Length: 103
Image (cartoon, rainbow, N blue to C red; front, side, top):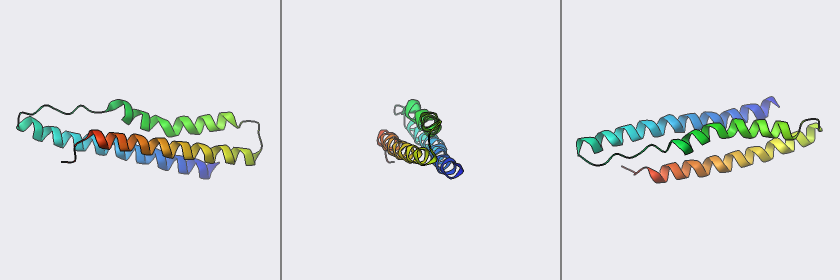
């Protein structure tokens, strides 16, 4: 259980770094856009916050689903939850990166 907690925490850490990285990148892009009188780019708050909540919610849901079950089933549910968390997190990250211009 501790090993899975560490792996889910790693996903949470990557969500935090993505959150602050996107905010920093958008801040610098919006500074340039303000200086050149362009419209500002809105921050995609919903996907960023969802990416932060996702690993914790899926870990809790996996523990709740597999309560009072065998250790093997707990491990299977946690691995499946980790796959779901990784796939959805990657999709959210790709969406956020597509919203932000590359410059």
